[in-house]
Structure formats: structure tokens, C-alpha cells
Length: 346
Image 1 (tube, rainbow, N blue to C red):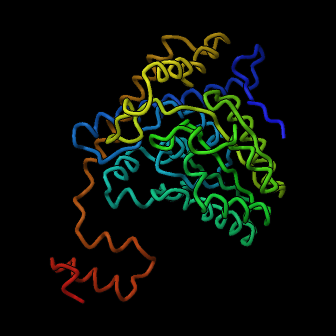
Image 2 (image 1 turned 90 degrees about the vertical axis):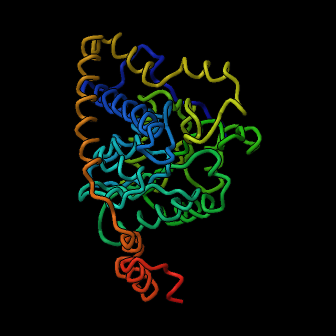
């Protein structure tokens, strides 16, 4: 199976409408702004351990904007940009990264589940959500995301096989950022492209330049349309790079070189898209400054909202396990509410 990397930004033609192109850029720049602010908050002790996504904005936002309003996203832990582009308020996302219960329940209308921390467990559950829509007579499509390292997990195989067999309307976004924490792709697998694995499941596999927002958006739209017509799932591999550490507790200098980082920094998806917009006469320095002022004001408002969230009581942690408390949860809830150690009840 011959695969080629789909690209659009380096071509002379402008494949999107003005509105689509500007929406992509604004959403990506907003995501980057959040990422930079989140890192600062974490260093100040105002956020927990955080997984930055700098460099992967095109992959996440491109897929997010290709979806319809009723479609769902099932993210992993690095998909803050995906969630923001799907309408999750910034203050809720801040509270999520603070491990505050108010960040565990997303607002009505935001069709996204909480990010999954265990690797690849979201994949079969995304397939289940997609099939649930079919059984309910809904036409929603589900987009789920995973890193290159996660594709070696059994859940990835099981989820893709199940989706292919039952023609589930799912988009599997693989953000190939070249590393599974510290392990480079060449030491994880023998295939040149992860999308090549799609043939073994009986679904299309597409490789896109993950730093080319146009390519991700257009190929994701094709995959969404295909899924909505009942033609089954698609594996979309976005070749990209994580410019920041794996998490705020990681030191990437221990496993990759500065030269490698700088080479990828020159391919920054936001800079590439901005240059394309400027060349088309759709963007300039004044518009950039105005957008940054707007983002600064928005973040300040949202941070204030997050800071106003009341301190949670200990028993709240049990309330989010099941829709209704089981016997064990009820006993734990009552013990925590009385200020006792749960172990005392057994």
C-alpha cells in the first residue's frame, strides 16, 4: 500500500474559504495562548501536573473544526486544544487541570468526555459511543485521539478492529509527535507510517502533515463525511512534534537534541498558517495584536472564574464514580463526610 503525506500549505492554491481559514488560525492561536498560560500557572503552583501540546495545535484544532455540532470527541490527556476548539470554557479546563470536581463535569452542549489518562482505554469506548448513536437513531460521528506510543496498546487494536467490523462512525486521530514520552518512533515500531496499519483492519489510512492546518482540516472533513454516510471509520495520522516537554515533570533534553527541536520549531503550525494568511492578505500585525489583547482579556476573566470555585469537600470525589452511589461508595461517602478514614468502615 503506497502512502503519501498530504500537504496543502506549501501549494499556491488557497483551499479554504476566508472564514474557514481565519477560524482555524484564531482557534489555534487561542489554544497556544492557553498552553503558554497553563505552563505559567503550573510553575506558580496554581495548576497540577500539566501535559502541554505546543506544536500539535493544527492536528487537534483541524479535527475539532471538521466536526459537526452534534458530533463527539473522546480525548486523551494532551488534547486541551481539541477541547477548547469544541467549546469547553477555559475556566472549566483550568479546574480540570487543578483536579477540582467542577472541572470533571462538562457543561451541557459540550459534546466531549473527560480526557483519559490511562493510555488507549478511550479507543474502544469511543467506538461504543459511536455505535450508541446508531442504536439511538442519531447520526453523530465520534473523533478520538491517541499518541504514537498508545498505538502499541491492546485497546488500540481491539477498538479499531471492532470499529471496522461494525462500520462505526469513528475518526481515529493519531498524533504522531515522534516520541512515546522518551522513546522515539523508530524504537516503537517497524512501519514507516502508523496509518499503514489501517489496511490490516479494513479501513482507510491517511497520513497528513500534522503541522499543516489545511491538510488536517480537509482530510478530517472527508473522514467525517465518510463516517456520516455509513462507510465506517478512518485512521488519520498527523505527523507532528511536541515542542514542549511530555509533561511539566519531564526533561526532554535527556532524550532529544536541541538541533532536532529547532528543526521542528521552524515548522511551527501556527507560524506556517499565519504566513499563508498574510500572503493571502487575510492577516497582519495589527490583527495579531488585537487578537492577543482579546485572548489576554478572555483568559483573565476565565481565570478569575476558576479562582472563585469553592473548595471541594472530601466526599465529592466519590460522587463522580457512578450515576448512583453503590453500597461501597455510599459507605465511603458517609465516612469522608464525617471526616473519618474510609478504612475504618471495613
